[in-house]
Amino acid sequence: MDEMLKRIFDELASLRKRMATKDDIASIEQRMATKDDIASIDKRIGHIEQTMATKDDIADLPLIKQAVFEILEAVNEIPTIKQNLADMSEKLEDVIATQARHELAIQSLAVRSLVHENEIRALKAK
Image (cartoon, rainbow, N blue to C red; front, side, top):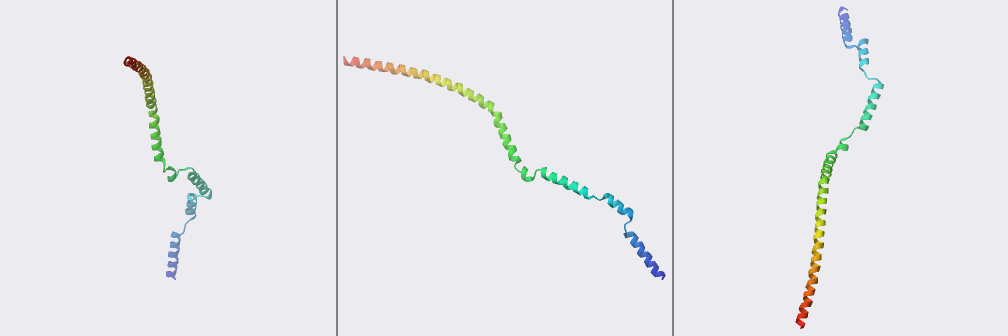
């Protein structure tokens, strides 16, 4: 019987080592999340998922950045383009004025040429 009691005591000692105490359970309860905690976390995750950008959402960002950069370069060139246009406009006005003077000179020469032709015909007819 001694042997059997020893085995029973050993078995009880083994059970005590494996069994959780009330303090162990209380400690686990304090560390565990409640249903409200999980619901709050789920709600926060849902909000994050709704408001965050996905890889697909930002896939075009490099292209958009490049387009914006190119547009800014073009916008920065506008003052130069305006100045070039003003310069060309002045040159065009000068060309038009010169052309008008040349046209008057050509008309004058044409009239003189006709007068000379008439004079030469008159001289030949004599």
